[in-house]
Image (cartoon, rainbow, N blue to C red):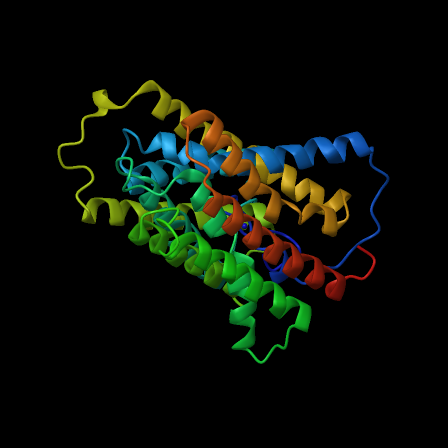
Length: 338
């Protein structure tokens, strides 16, 4: 989940992926005519691939340590993207100023170490302790709501409809995580870990438009991923994830899931998203914010037999409605033509 270029994202992410739509100042250029089939194909990639990253994380951490595997994912994706940029644009492709490097590094640590890393941690562990992938996606969907609250601290005054969407979304969060009327949909500590991750992602997204950043979103992404990977390695070593770690004990499906996250989640879907920002109405592109959680819940149920209780359906539906209200209201405010 908005770099200094306005509508561009800062990270190929994961949970949530790039910065939430409402954090960017959208400038809608005259778009060349593009075949609708191409737009919908790219949108399907963003919907399905980004929605499936939560499932990929859950499978990866079955036999791989959480922080170290996340570090491997982002460092490999950063190297691949840097190589592509170097080959396509020449020797100066990755040149940035020290201030831009520092801004990108800080955003990368907040988004990928704090935001993504804590989600990976919450999804690790045995059944009954780990947060199901679908629930993690629903909790991360609160990022746009948290960003609205951060905007209030700067004196911004969102519309009443936006604040209503925030209230609705957080009501869904309460339904998911608080006990009462049955067991919560996820272990309370794991759910709180994901909420902290969402807060870190929100702060990183919010800060990205206020820090000196590389002008090119792809270049910014390289440095963000490298900084995030470095922080994740330190966290993993600090937790002792490498003590007694047996590389031979890692399952084939965990390796495949990690490769999928590296290539599909961090490169293919991100490229599709950036392409969409230039060829499709932003109001259409931003629908990923509330489609991804639905995809994640469905895939978790189909492929990992994660339970979908009445509480999950109700809380998830309330969160998605709240996010949809916030995103649609903010898009109309920023660009009435979309």
